Image 1 (cartoon, rainbow, N blue to C red):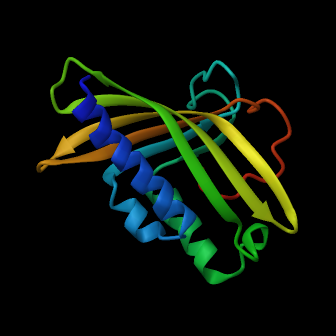
Image 2: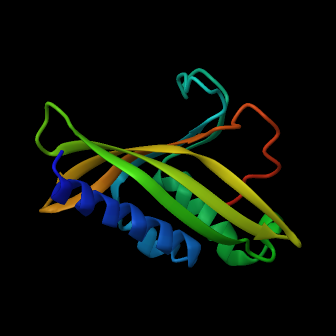
Length: 159
């Protein structure tokens, strides 16, 4: 895709990262279509989330449940909440056969501070974007951690 198109989607990914870093989960959900999939594979090859164990494989209901638990203060893995900074880079946009659907690939680094410890999560994301009412929304997000097949400690943040 051309530079202007890439910049448009890069801005959307930057906004998603900012909303997550600031715990603005309800606003973050407005970036998604009502029926979305959020998948973090536990194998390097990605596999099929319907037949393989995944770190996370959520739809809207499960994501809203997770956010509700964060808000109660009883999500012990997030008490106190992690402080995060996300860096998004190498954004590439790919057209599909359907004009209202685009694929976006990006690399990320998430620095997380929790319980007096800092850790870094790295990998790449694939987003399937869908144009709806003149707005591009996320239909599917796949988060591919480079160390997905290792002990991840408790990945309780939204990646």
